[in-house]
Image 1 (tube, one colour):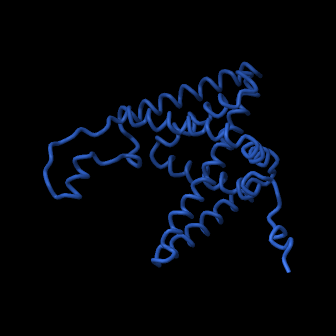
Image 2 (cartoon, helix red, strand yellow; image 1 turned 90 degrees about the vertical axis):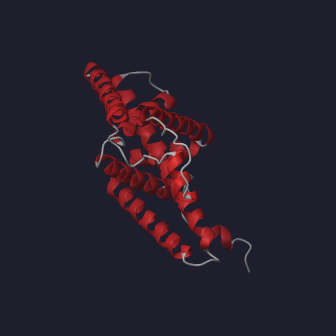
Image 3 (spheres, helix red, strand yellow; image 1 turned 180 degrees about the vertical axis):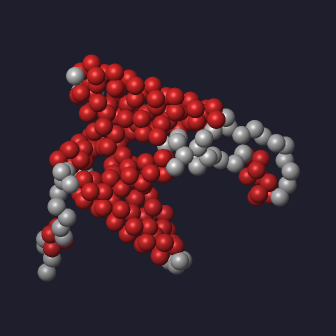
Length: 221
């Protein structure tokens, strides 16, 4: 059985690398494309400055992958206990659909409040704060999901067990490859974001404490 999972893990990694290479060569994914510096200057100044080349897709993909990989490593080192709690919730959660729905509701509430605050000058800064908080929750959940998926592959295949960094790196490579496929990238983002945010909320931001106002009642009149 170990041999099957070794072969399966290697096949997944090869397919992921082929998808990333194909995206770099054929530029499948236009979601993450950016206008060139010259185009931005034309829009802002309505002038015709000397044309500047756009960043090559291969360099952009490499930069995105390495920066997000290092950010994941940093998150694992800074918040190991909270990531572990979120990961355990994903493992123990027999009804994953509840976590998924919780994530959808969380995102909906945050976006609704942020959109409402955007309409007023006084509450305008809340828009950026809430969107940032939502992104941080999604990111923590994504790191925990990647760690869980990578650790599962490690356990079944026997490749480098008990290595959280490698587990995250392998899963991150697989998810990053899925993000390069048109249409599938939107589904991947939605599923990972919903599960991640739901797991973070279910564990109270990874603290595993119950949601309560008891701390506010202590010492109150």
